[in-house]
Image (tube, rainbow, N blue to C red; front, side, top):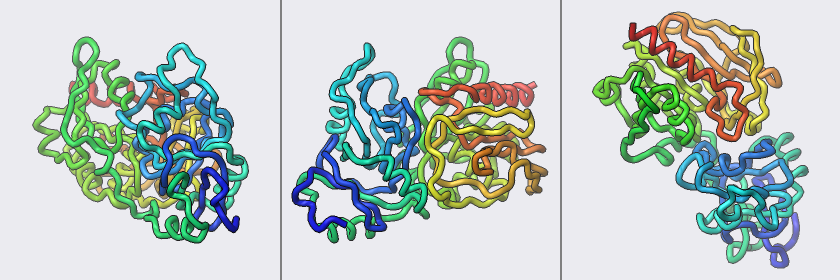
Amino acid sequence: MNPTVSHIGAVLVLEDGRMFTGAPYGARGAALGEAVFATGMTGYQETLTDPSYHRQIVVQTAPHIGNTGWNSHDSESDRIWVAGYAVRDPARAPSNWRSETSLEHQLETQGVVGIAGIDTRALVRHLRERGAMRAGVFSGDALAPPEALLDRVQRSPPMLGANLTGEVSTRRRYVVPALGERRFTVAAPDLGIKSNTPRMLAARGIETHVLPSTATLEEILELGADGVFLSNGPGDPATAEAVVELTKRVLERPLPLFGICFGNQVLGRALGLGTYKMRYGHRGINIPVFDHRAGTVAITAQNHGFALEGEPGQRFDTPLGPAEVSHSCPNDGCVEGVRAMAVPAFSVQYHPEAAAGPHDAAGLFDQFVELMRVRGR
């Protein structure tokens, strides 16, 4: 560890004591969170505004960040959710016809503390070998002796056991209307939903009622919902007992249910599977997933540090009948989807609505529509 930080502009400190020095990028101050890396070559605006990244310091593996600036159309929510940001080579000026301002300006405006000019390759290799861990980014008046900065990092809360859905969920319900004729009504408890998800549903004639994460089955039934959507979101799924119980009640009705990312973990736990914290997770837009039923591979967008327990293709018994691990990642065997075989419910660990791409899995929304159509006959 360096003996002093008085001569530097910014520093990223990992909980195991490793430090990376660089220049301030965005707001000055201190940011604490879990250091993770995202492998997407594009889509940084969607990453930063994805509520699933709440309380995480995102390290971009792509060296050049900020080239296309920032616009008012590509955000996945109304704010930046990452706790901090680390990049190698930020753009000096944005260059894109859709750009309205610079990335750094948005980071400054929204108070997101970042660091630039660090060796992100070395940092990512470290996280791959040691695992995602607590970290802090410090600049400006927050700079202090290394021992003090490390102490702040080590006293910050870990992601394991973090209950974060209530921190990102909407406080009041809202409706995203169907495009054209309304075919179905869907209730979507907001666990950290991205803006593009209701748009994908709307394009298929679905009116989506986005509800607080504390929604009850009675509220869903009052809507006359034809189905339930469980969204992506941050934190440890083992803390989501209330949403898991809601899911069990939905399955007992049964109402058609489709879940993604955090919603996949919620459905899996409702079906009796456990969850665990991954070594460094899957975060990027280039992750392969094998569909065991179709025998096909899709390239997917993902952001998760927890996963369901299980084996690729595994079938298992639940109180509601048999279920299966429907999808897995060929890279590491991670469970990427589950399907109930006696009730109309399925989920995937990835993001089929991925705005920045890829769009290989967009057809999963059509499968959800088909579940509701068959039930409504």
